[in-house]
Length: 62
Image (cartoon, rainbow, N blue to C red; front, top):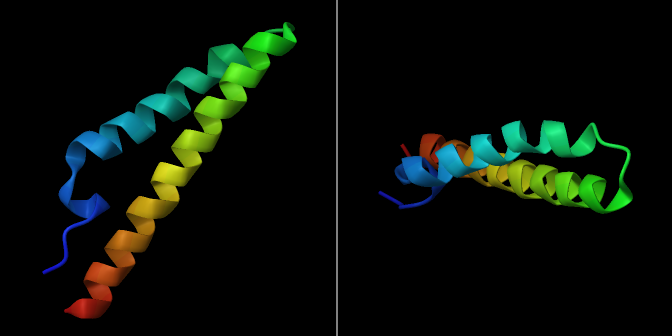
């Protein structure tokens, strides 16, 4: 069995946290803060895609 994002619940928690934390940063009018929010979104989306890819690979390996 492959080890990946599906075997790491801590990574999934961090991914969800990044997406949740991005909201207040994106709601501000300051460009610097909005950039931080965009980075949180980027990390969250990357983690989500990685987790989904690992889940699909685990499903296909069975």
